[in-house]
Length: 126
Image (cartoon, rainbow, N blue to C red; front, side, top):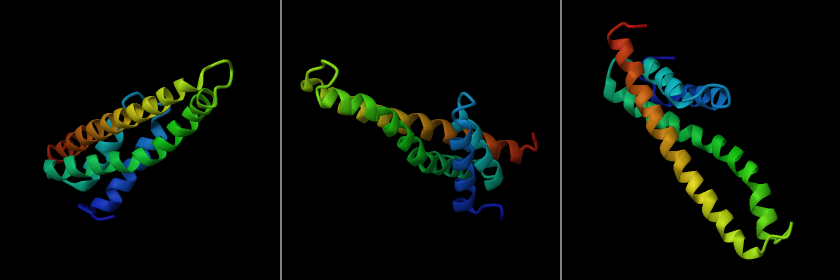
């Protein structure tokens, strides 16, 4: 694992994000920091690799979001449990808003973590 290998460092940061999200609050910062630290001393490169790690990690996190949202979406869209089927569109809207909220949350925090990780390496803080 060479310093500056963006793809590998992004995958490692994304793995940290996905594994620590259920446990650690603001886990994207930690995953981005790992990716940025591994990337090297350039804070612009750390920002980039952190954002890429966040975007990669959105895929498995979105899968969990969709699995959790299926109960709400399908029960409400089918009109089951005494709920009119008109409310099904609301379920789709909620999933779309949740997707973009998750994307923004993870990408911004992991980019910030990537910058912090590369800054820490350049200043020899860690």
